[in-house]
Length: 111
Image (cartoon, rainbow, N blue to C red; front, top):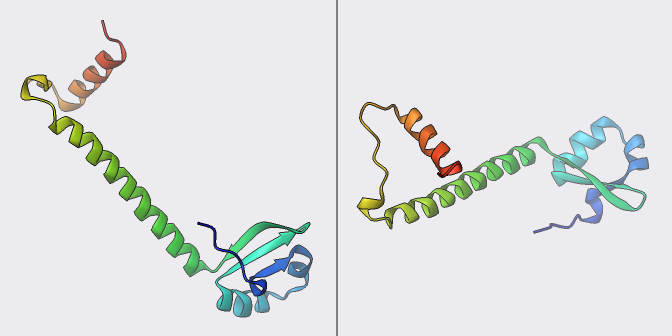
């Protein structure tokens, strides 16, 4: 989903050279929260207010975690559908990590 920039949120690369830091940070970013940088009549970059950036990164983390959770649900759903006689039993005298490594090795090199 692309959110377009309003005219007041766009500045050219030439304008950027002329704008004072105070105007850029205290006025433009404080009001707009995002600025699109135009170079050669093309939108080339975006400047974000730090709070907007932090919200964006936080939301991205949430979505990545949700995606990972959904993948785990799908994997778990498949495992739940396995009958008990299809389960792989871990010998009591073998560590979990050794068992998992051995199982993965067997899956990648079936005899």
